[in-house]
Length: 262
Image (cartoon, rainbow, N blue to C red):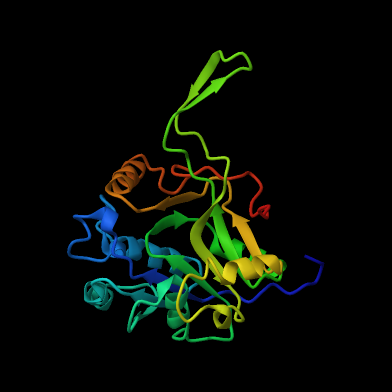
């Protein structure tokens, strides 16, 4: 950034996609939507942790996109002592991820400003402000957070002769993945499909136009997708060890926010 350049305006609004059924989390999701599943040992559902994190990062208004068992989530939001203003929307019919995101974005209080979005099953801690600055510096229309998850199996290292040299438990993956957290410019929502998956339409188009950026989670960041009962168990263990604010579930590159290579 050049000397004397103005810092970008803070991002103060967000969409949380909280309509997932969470079939792989049954029986926990038999009577509640996936984001309402409690992180063991916290007494708070996943979405409660998300809203607290968003508020700590400067978000004042959140739009919660509901679907499966929406009334359970809505009742909790009405009774909880929230750190920000929360509005819920319910899709009139299944619109797909891109259509659902576009539908929710229509309820953002400041449509002419950038906004965050996160999937409703992500438990993470990193600086959204740094990600927003990265997004603004690159003039991107959309920026994805990128994580490097640990491989769930042990790895075996060998030499060129096939001799086993070492066993490595759950090493970092050589690949970056979409971490389910985003910064979008004010010009992004009109590019979303009315129905369907934006990751198959809008994102590839933006990538071809060099308007899609990738923000690598900084070294020491914590990130976990809560997809299965095992993920809940692992999250509880990390919490008990006091590592849920550090790189327990993912290891990230040392260069904060380095752009990913396509």
